[in-house]
Structure formats: C-alpha cells, structure tokens
Image (tube, rainbow, N blue to C red; front, side, top):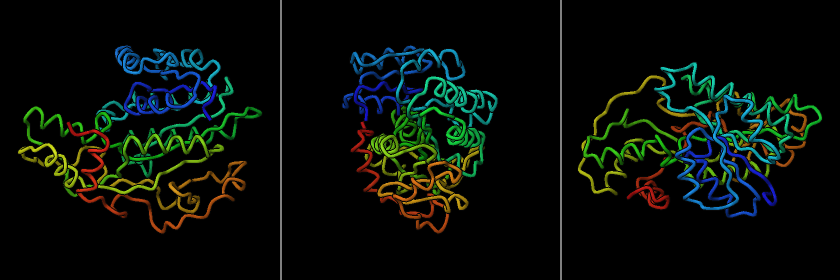
Length: 329
C-alpha cells in the first residue's frame, strides 16, 4: 500500500515516529516526511537513517499554514504529535488544548484541503472515560477525526484512529524512568504496586497502525487485543534483569492518574466488532458502517475492556518482552 506513496508523520521524531520510519523504509514508499518542532532530533534522525527518501519539516501542528506547506502531494498522514505528560498537562491545560485539540483540527482541515487519501490519528486508553486533561483532549481528538468523515463532501479522504496504552520503553514511560533511577543509583519510585497497565511493545504498536492503514475505510477506531501487567511485576522484572539492589519507594497516585486503564468502555461495546488481532469500534452514523461491519462479528466483550479485567503477563513474559525490545542495557 505504500508503493510510490508519500507519508507524513506528525511528531515524527518521537519514539513512535522513529519506529514507524524504520518500518516504512523497509517498504517501497517513495517519501517519508517528518513534521516536528525539534531540529536537533531531526538532525539525529537524519544521521541515524541516512536515507534519501526522508524529508524533514520544522513545524508545529498549531501552525496551520506550515501544515499546508508540508502536506503538498501527501497520500497518507499519521498524526502522532501530542503533549502527553499527564502531571504537566494538569498544570498547563490550555497548552494541551492548543496542541492536542486545535492542532488536530488544523491537521483535519489541511488534509481535507489537500485531499489526503488516508489520515490516521494515534489515540490512547486515557481518552476512554477520561479522568484527566490529557485524556479529555485525546477524546476530543478522536471525535474530531471520526467526525471528519461526515463533512469531507466529495473528497476521498478517510479518517480513522488507533487506540492503545503505554508503549513499553517509550519516552517518559515506566521502563526508561526506572532504568535511569537504577543508573543514577537512586531509589525506584512507583505510584502503587497494585496498579495495572495494558502492555504493548513498540513493534506491536507499529503493527497495529499498519493493520489499520491496510483495513480501515474511514470512521473506525482500531483497538489491539492486549495483555496487561502489574506495576509491581514490571518493576521487579527490571530490577532482576539489571542485577540492581535499588530500594522501592511508593509515592502514591499522582494527580489525574487512573488506578487501572480502560481501552473500551461499556457504552462502546455495542458498536465494537472482532477481527483476528483487534477490536474495531464503528461510528454507527458512518455512511460505510453496514458495509464495514459485514466482514466482522460482534465482539464478545461483556464488560469494559480494562487492564484489571484481562490476563496479566507473568514476570517471565515481561522479562522476555524487555529483552526482545532491547530495553535492558
């Protein structure tokens, strides 16, 4: 699907952007455009990949004019740009709205004007029954993208989303934080050992995006079928793999933080269908709804799809994932 295509990734210098770029360069894609604010990270990324199919655009999704310039002749856009650190966003909600909501609207308007064929937004479990500002802004992002399918008019643009939890090893997530504390001989801080989180590796996150781009027709939210982990188990797994003797300090739940995460709430179940590796949530007002769901079966979910209601990874499974993703030095 990428042959002779131009793909643009917003927030492309982040962990996901790097992983997507690596995978796309293994295809016959014509051009990959990286749109982000940090010129130093763009320089590092350029040196890392050293591929003449890469193009770099300095810009912010808040700047609609710059988005228009970057979108010329783009076929596929993957929207990964966001402010996402929950405690910081709780203190700076207006800035999160400018990037996560207004920035998403800018992307949609520009993609419609340029008739971009496929536009995919990267969502989060925190958008489901949101408890914090970050989750609320990402919920609005999802609604904007799904609703864009209603007012595209005669354009061929299709808008869809993926939704998943914290990526194992991504910037700002639990694994690099703990490894940094171990490296600097500090005590390991965790909020609550009984917390659970969905587990997805970067490899699986990229696979999900590729499945959505391949199978999506517009108006869907793709949610992967995942296992979860207990915070205590992942901390102990990292300590054991690192041969560390660090102590653990329990600091309590932070503002805006959920004890368990939810990927599909009870009210979404009636619009949720099963595919082999994913759940697919359809917007029932979509003009293609009947055609889309005919290829799938209704989900067998009875309760919300929550990290405390599914199978938990064993410590050995966690260790295997950490090793396979090269997250342990």
